[in-house]
Length: 527
Ligand code: FAD
Ligand code: SIN
Image (tube, rainbow, N blue to C red; front, side):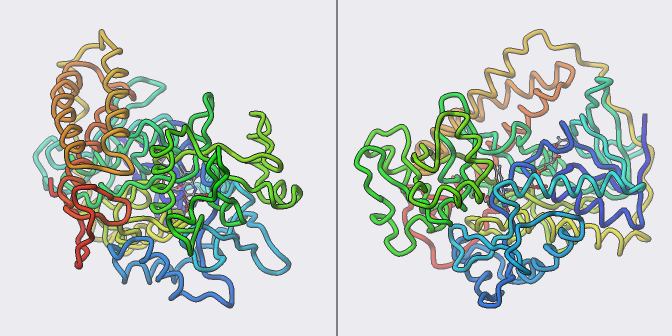
């Protein structure tokens, strides 16, 4: 069945819903989401959103902090533009009912690593949940928006899918597997927005939700978009270390409010040995590498993050989610340190977009964590990513609306062809390959890299590629298979990008190339 809409938005997180809400004033929008509508990273965000709202702070400070964290690889004009949009984005979220913490007449601002000022607006330690909830409520109330969950998008529809060949480069929508019917449908429209989030699950340990398998990055690449800076994979320094709970983040705001990192046996405050001035509030790459070094050097399973020196009432008021969750696991953070390890957290690279959120392909816009917009450079500054979603989600909507009259109507599109596939006889292949990719990516393409390990990863990716493509070509698609194909595609893009960069910069630290080039250069892969 071929459905017709004005605009298709793939993803119901901060980027997708921001675009959908801005578009819905004039257009009919279909929002597709892989799982539940709130199952992306947005709902999991803890710390908050960065914005200059304090009289003692300036845009220039925020720009400088962003560029320092990004090791100069950022696009300064984009950074300036996004930073200047931030107060407006916060105002709009307040209009939608996001209950940011206030202090008298002003919003309460917390602090995170790499920020020279307090500038993080937040809703306790569950900011993302409050934002996702407000955006979803607004979208549900908007008659021009149709929300469809359980739709795993497989591939973008381009000219080669038209019944009569038509404008090969242009995107006309997406094929998606509907969980309820088990059928693949073509969703067709003059404009499509990719807002599918990151690729964190390509790593064995990640703070990201189960669905962060880089689907949009892989779909964009296969359709012909350039992909940039995929080697810049951010590891959050403080993920809970617990045998049963694998991916619970301990927000950076805990360090922002005084939390200290300690050697778990000696109690030594080790950040003094790595970054004596900024200590625990150094940018994430510095703190994650320091923890990684301690763990490897002393054969530790974890280090300690301790905020128990702050008053118990303060801790309970500022970090109620973390406090309650850990209490349930037998850790009272008002009296005990928290065992933490680094884990993959954010995908800085992605589909290349310009200031209008345009990709290389006509008919396709993209926003949020699946993109590389020039904002983050070699390392994202804490709490700048939700901000990017709001600014670029709106930019996409604005650009689509501005050019609506010039967008051609889609041609008839061929239905999904299942004539040459059968049901899979061996699901174990998917599980095996998925586990293998995530494990070698963690071990060979992690926080500290070497050329030899990257080459080992590249060899495995080559071998697995043949197997996955054979499997994909023979069997009916399932969400697991679609995700495996995308994980593999993203692993390949990450490793190829990492092997291209012959320097260490920001998140990409490679022992064979420890120096940083004088001129920052993006790693751009062209399909
Ligand atoms: P997401 O919110 O991840 O949404 C992706 C959407 O795409 C989902 O709806 C998903 O279903 C859909 N999708 C994916 N693949 C497909 C497919 N194949 N077909 C159909 N739909 C698909 N950033 C901050 O700025 N501040 C913070 O405090 C913060 N804390 C964080 C804490 C955690 C634990 C994590 C994991 C991240 C945090 N981040 C934070 C990062 C931030 O949350 C994300 O970068 C941001 O939410 C990404 O939003 P998005 O809209 O791009 O994607
Ligand atoms: C955190 O709360 O530490 C996460 C903030 C972010 O990823 O920006």
